[in-house]
Image (cartoon, rainbow, N blue to C red):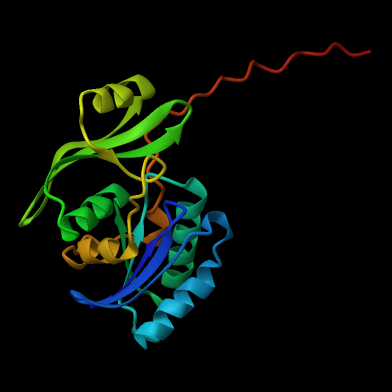
Length: 210
């Protein structure tokens, strides 16, 4: 299965093309919001010598991270599926980061962190072993004090915005390669753990006639 993987959840945005477990091409830029997304995809396809119609599945990193970048990746995926009927998978960007760190040779317990703004962080804990990655604590939204307490306790925390480690499209694609839980692209949405706060509008005032 030929997979086009898109990972736009950080300023290091990347696109990869895989044929099964074989990486055919990967393109990465660091311009963040200024990324020419379509040109990046075309460049990766060209490097891989794969045409648009040859792609069987699009795997997209759904965060957490840059809401703008993730929305752009999802919109591209939705248009592609509408035009060509490809299969689609959403992949946790922190899981892809953990997979990348494991592939690079890191082992042991690790905390992955993404600055969620408003004094909060997305945190997830993994165990990196020779056979792959194991989730120790699933992703959660934590206050800055909790994040700083982890650092004070000597725990290693890495991730976009808190270090030089970023999820890569290659590992989004590799994680997707072992899955078959395809979805409609219209069902994709960025990871967002905050509760939605709203205030109910008061009833309209009755204005007496003049």
